[in-house]
Length: 292
Image (tube, rainbow, N blue to C red; front, side, top):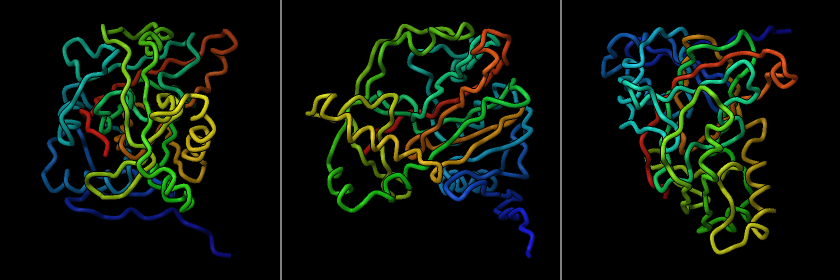
């Protein structure tokens, strides 16, 4: 019997190594210190891994908020969150805090970020500042696969279909998190295609999610529910996903156009009223792009 071995890293340009973490999506990037200036060749290899694997991970990165912002800005122009304040001196960095007596992680349901905006975020760079020894992992799902595994009949049905994305009440973004501060934003709705085409790869991806997609355009919520429920459930099938376990200094960079993610709410001590774990993350968000 042959004993399986761990996959060897794929060597890219400038010493950058890329190691896939699942069959569906995700790769760990090795040989990179994000506190140091990256050559154009090294960054090109990182960006290619981002496009190919949809979410990429770095370990043991000791970077300041300013270095975090600078690295993220190499990918795309940055934007702040419409409803939650960023750091005082670096507003492009959002601090996401879960206190020990809170049992939910911020955004702890399958979603793509801010799809209620006319130009939803292209992606984000998330850095773990303070995380527990276990718990609070994040799941990612591949929306290319979610679309490509649909039947031909379903693909024809979805062609040209649009959906309404709704932020809901603004208070929902921070009301349960004492360590986060609100902005003066207001409830927002936008209409997007149910199937979008990635502008760089040309591949089609499913673009609905259970948090923000309320109904199909020109249909009622009740009429939309059966098909929308099916699509949202199908999109996050286990074989389309990968799971990332955080430790301090871990970084994830994802393409929000073709992924969904879900931080897992598994602080069961806090659910029972005991002291749970504290989790502090810093996120730099890529500015938006109109889905087509």
